[in-house]
Image (cartoon, rainbow, N blue to C red; front, side, top):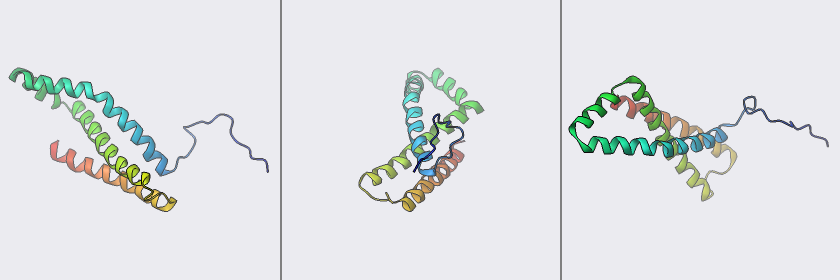
Length: 124
């Protein structure tokens, strides 16, 4: 039986299943969180150093672009946590069959987005 396989994979054309999208977003959100650590620590150190820098920080985070960036960071944290719980359960062989894996991938997407909307809405 001869299969014709693509020689050059075009990742923009391939349709990924939802569990692989959740896995990819888990990696992206982890990288996002890791890259944001220096900025978060700098902001924390600045807010604790003086009242003037705290006021400057409050003025900075009131800008809509910064709020959007913080919302993306919040989503990254929540998605990484939810997907991490899913992967930990899969590591102990819970939910590894295909229907359950698809269901838990949907749950991760819905819960992480819903929590982002709720927490982001409360803090906006």
